[in-house]
Amino acid sequence: MPIPSLLSPVRPRRVPAVGAALVAGAAALAYVRAVDPHDGTAVLPRCPLHWATGLHCPGCGGLRMTHDLLHGDLAAAFADNAVLLLLAPLLVVLLAM
Image 1 (cartoon, rainbow, N blue to C red):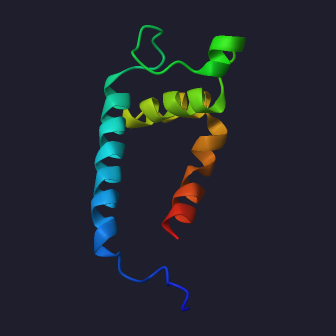
Image 2 (cartoon, rainbow, N blue to C red; image 1 turned 30 degrees about the vertical axis):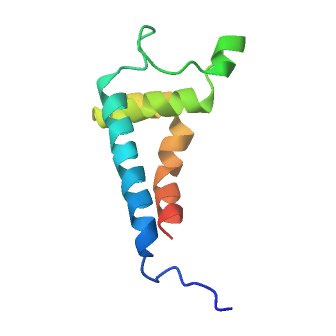
Image 3 (tube, rainbow, N blue to C red; image 1 turned 90 degrees about the vertical axis):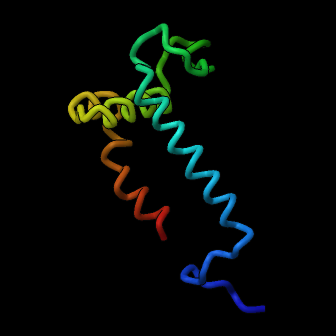
């Protein structure tokens, strides 16, 4: 059985799933841009770690970082989650492979 190549064309039955994932991702980014996670009254899912301990997890910082990046505030994004911000280009390259 041949091993599928990463450069092979996308199978037609996967196209709707990829399109749905892109639409869902774009909608999520639009919502994060519109709603400020820094504000305690924002309508967002509650973080279980923050609820239990009062500590912000890396996901909380990533959400705030994404909001700041979508508003063009690089300094605030770095303050929210410096590690994820610095590793983001590497993650994009790895996901594209």
